[in-house]
Amino acid sequence: MKNKRIVIAGGAGFIGKGLVEEWGENNFIVILTRSQPAPPAHGNVSFLHWDGATLGNWATALEGADLLLNLCGKSVNCRYTPANKNEIFDSRTRSTEALGAAVRRCKNPPALWVNAASATIYRHAEDRPMDEYTGEFHSDFSVQVCQRWESAFNRQETPGTRKVILRMAIVIGAQGGVMDPYLNLLKFGLGGRQGSGKQKFSWVHIADVAGMLEFFMEHGDCSGVYNCSSPQPTDNRGFTATLQKVCGYYFGLPAPAWMLRIGAALIGTETELLLKSRWVLPTRVTEAGYAFKYPGVEEALRQVKEALPRKRYHLF
Image (cartoon, rainbow, N blue to C red; front, side, top):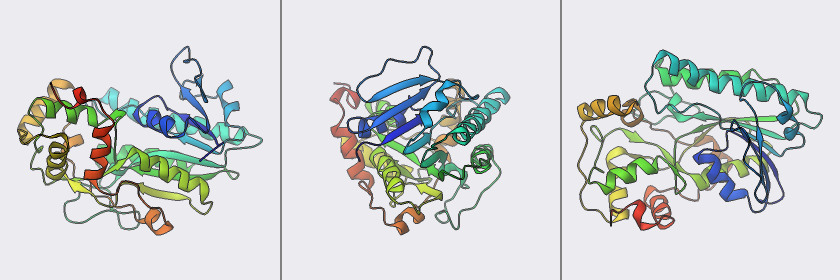
């Protein structure tokens, strides 16, 4: 992909950094960031300040964009207090509404608007996989977050802009994200299964997040909801065992559910992030013809390991 103009709202995090690595050399990228002042430009990447909620001068950056990508949202890696819940909801819906207003003001609106969403919109599933056609929802907090997020996006009337909802599974890559805590556990001998280990673990490599977005830009008939996940999900036991194998470990202490509950309370997070069974398949994008670069978890984890210095996954 070359010479595309891409605007990424909330692009300063792990996924945004990964996409900049994939695209930054041959394309022009604008990152909308709440950092003030905005970081200086480097290479083909520039930064604009916005507040994530209201229109401002940043809106002119959307003119003529090939892709507008919204990754905004407070991390769910926190305790679900009333204040945190409100911030989790508002950070997603208000940013989406602000971007919708900006798109409608454009004389030459973005060709494609992809709004990030989460595969955790589907219920805890150990009985069968969930896809875009047959997935089921239950009314727990994480599902409510996803539904409000998607509803805010669907309400945006943008007749000149094609729209895609990207329900992302757990993204893995050398740039950080979920790999950091998993590798830290591994180094200290704690990299075994979490809970029963039977909970399904749907994942996707950062290169396939970029690949799917490129696929959507190239295929103008793609719109609506797509699951962004590997076609070969594993389970928690399989993921942790594969990570041990790839990084050269032969043992990792398991963490039973009661231990996880205590640990989650101590570090200010929720056990759902580890214990919910996410069993998701990317049916629609596979039907459309997308070929995954990293369909299997072992090859994906080997790429991550090879891109890291040894100190990231070994004490010595």
